[in-house]
Image (cartoon, rainbow, N blue to C red; front, side, top):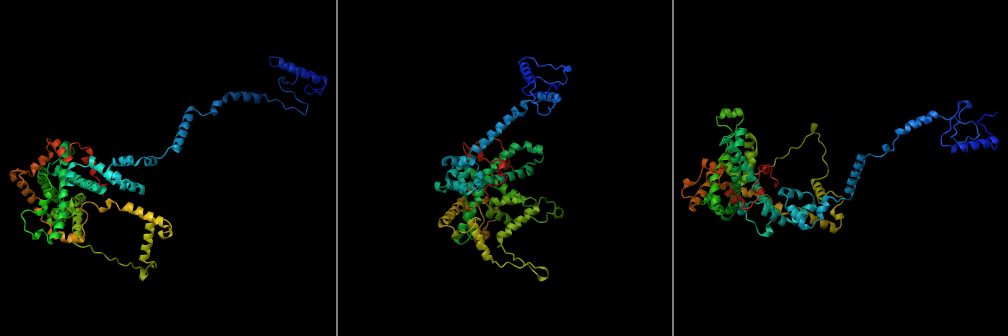
Length: 520
């Protein structure tokens, strides 16, 4: 008998098998295999054609597949909610970055009036930094100097500064005028801080941290009151130097050959001050001069032996040094000397500066370098003139290839126009009390007054002549001046007089604003 799994095609057994297969499909339950029938053939399986030998069905494989199938979850291949949120945020950020406009383009797209209003509200140091950002920023600020300077004069410059340096006509309100005022304010604020430090430590004897913390309100009142007075002293020395040089050029000689009771130059300057300003500056002026002189003296007076042990070998400078520093260099030079740490370094800086003012600078000839046994490196055949010519072409061309000769005429004219616009500005005029020429120093230095004749005799005579006080004894001195500076009452009236009725806090320089001068 043929095996049950081998059936001839189109035979009776073939059709019986086919009928049995169709009936098994109509049954609701699966077929059950009986062990007595021999090898089991799954009735639910597909029909096997008689071609070779059929492969046995691996029931273990189906079981393994059915066991692994519940572990597979379609959710595992899908992103989680947190990852979806993260990706959506990342995509939205990238889309914003691609579609958003940079801030500088948004700012430059504003109307010119709004741009200038925004720039004018910035601090002056930030405005000066913006000038260095690019040529377009430099041109924008330079062309609009007038509205920027006018805004700062109205909102950030104290009243006493405008009284001493009146606002010029509208065409002359420029950044140079504004920066000059803020430079003087910076010097006055820094010197006020330095003098207050010295007075607190050496006169009021507040040395420990607890004592200084107790003395803080008095310290702040003293510093605030000294700033306008030192600003006036700056104005006095600046104007005195200018008028002194003009007087010598006009008369052909100085004041040393002119007999006088009251110094005419000082009297002319003091006529610019009102009674209250003249009296208060006169009371504080000895404190300013004595503090500066004390700064340039050795720190101890025990004797030469102890000074030699501590390394303080130089004595105090003569009075001519102090007079030249104040009358030629001004309070800015006084501040420079004051800030040098170490007595020997400070004293050496004073000597070097005075020698540079008194004597013409001498050029030190550089010695030729010699090689080993007379053998030296061969110099280049290019001359200095060639180097200078190529250097000029490089600077004028701004490191671009080619030169103006190879460019079109319109490009060259545009370059020269930009250079004129960038470099020929009002700030090129220099800072207040700049360096004098050698000719001006030659005529000014021999005619300087003595230290005791500066300010005090003329100011006291004018105070009595104007009848600001009845007697010389009514002028406060020494300890009375110290108590006047730290007193509590009258601060509001003085602030209104110095700073104005509705002055913002920006016109009263805080301590952190005097660390460095951004104007220079």
